[in-house]
Each structure stands twice: as C-alpha cells, then as structure tokens.
Image (tube, rainbow, N blue to C red; front, side):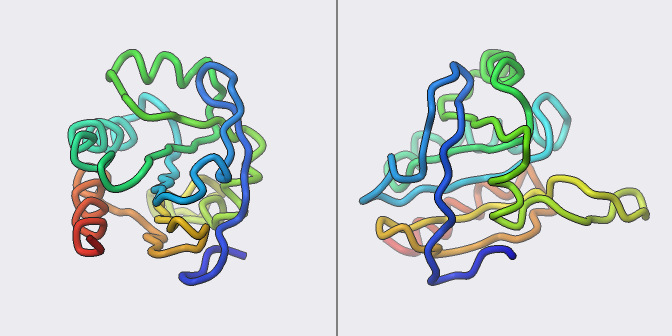
Length: 155
C-alpha cells in the first residue's frame, strides 16, 4: 500500500492524549503535516518531537501538525507534559493508520529485518491530497527543519 503524491490521503480518526477523536477531515481546507514515529520518550522520537516543538511558531503559520504513534493516549500525556509539546499526538495501537500510510512494516534495525513503525512524514494539502511524502526519516532531529523548508518553498 503506501502513499502517493497527488493522491487522496487515507482518512483517519484516532484519539488524542485526552481521548478526544481527531480526524483528518478536521483539517479540511488547510495544510496538515502528519509525522509517524515509533515510541514516546525514546531518544530519536524525543529529538524529533522537540525539534518540531522548537519550530512550532513558524510551522503553525503554514500547517497544522499531528504526530501518530502506536502508543496509548495515557503515554502521550506524559510525553506532551515532559517536553511541553503544543501539537496533538494521536494513538494508533492497532497500527491501522500507520499501515495505511506505509509507516508500519518491515524495516532494518541493527542489521536485522523486523516489523515496526517506519519514521516518516506526510504533508497533506487543503484538498486532502498528498503534497509531499518523506517515506523514511533517518535524521530525526534534523527532519522538522526539512519539513519547514518545504512548507516555506510552497509559500
């Protein structure tokens, strides 16, 4: 499956840290960046989340931002509070949305093939179509700046 630039992004509806349902349709009419990450409180995911947080004042002028991981809402609460994250984190413990977006599958980890979350990001336009896809983010701490640069280039 996966994502294709120019095609409609798969719809989703997932709970946020407080258990409120958030849907892709909630962002209709504006750009939204959805970033997929493996696990709250891990080093790479923390670096990526904090880099998005630090760029939030510039990012929020251009797009909504939503993080999705398989963590449960309660774990998101602790992650948000520990790092003062100003954007929603959504829970996908069944990995249905992760799979639909190509963010869950076989990957290499320490030289072995394993099933897991593939750190990736999708920029969805106001029309619900994919504008850009980063299918494999290797440098978590640097990636948010790359996303901001892409959003700026569009402006």
